[in-house]
Length: 223
Image 1 (cartoon, rainbow, N blue to C red):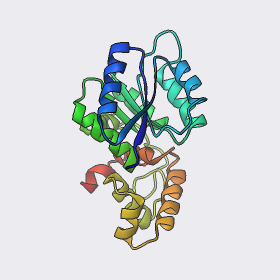
Image 2 (image 1 turned 60 degrees about the vertical axis):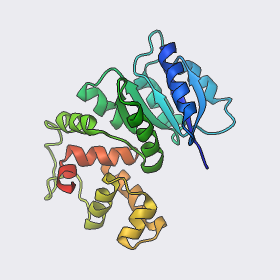
Image 3 (image 1 turned 180 degrees about the horizontal axis):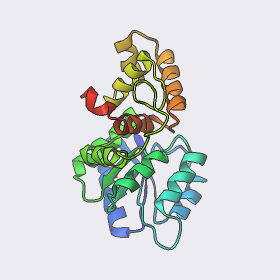
Image 4 (image 1 turned 135 degrees about the vertical axis):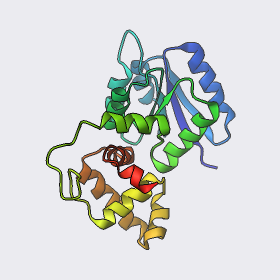
C-alpha cells in the first residue's frame, strides 16, 4: 500500500502533537514531518529523503511567516505539495484568497476527525476537498466580482462543450482515469484538456477549477 506522506505545520504544540498521533494511527498515512513554524518547515524540506504529498498548515504562526506566506512559497518552490489549511479563521474572503493562491483544502480546526481523514484522502486522490461551508463561503465571496468582460455564456472566458464536460466531472471528484472512461478519451488527452482548462481559467490547480465553477454558479447547476 502506497502511503500518503503528510506534514503538519502548527505553532500550537499540543494541537500539532495530537494531530501527529492521529496521522500515525491511520494505515494509509505517513507522518513525514512536523514543524512549529513556517521557517522550520522550509528548512526541514531541504533534508527530507522523499517528497511530501500533503502539508496541513495553520494560518496563525506568531513571530514569523504566516500561513498565507508559507502557502505562496510552497506553491512556487514545491508545486507538488498539496496544501491544506486547518484554521480557526473561517472568513469568506480569507478562504477564497487561500484557494486562489493554490491551497486545495480549507477546514476549521474544530472539524470532525473523520472529515479530516476523508479530506486528506480526497486531496491526495482528487486534488481538492471543499465541504459545504467552504463552498458557500466561495460562492458568497464571488457575488460582486467578475461582472466585466463576460462572454455570451455569462463567463469571463469561452469554454467549449468538452471543457464544460470536463469541469463538471472534476467537480464530482472524478480522477483522470475515470474522466477518460466517462468521455471515451485517453488519460493523456484528459490530462491535456485539464491543463488547458487551468490555463484558460487562469487558476493554479484543480482546486482553482472548482473555485471558478462555484464562483460562476456552475457548481449549483451540476448537482
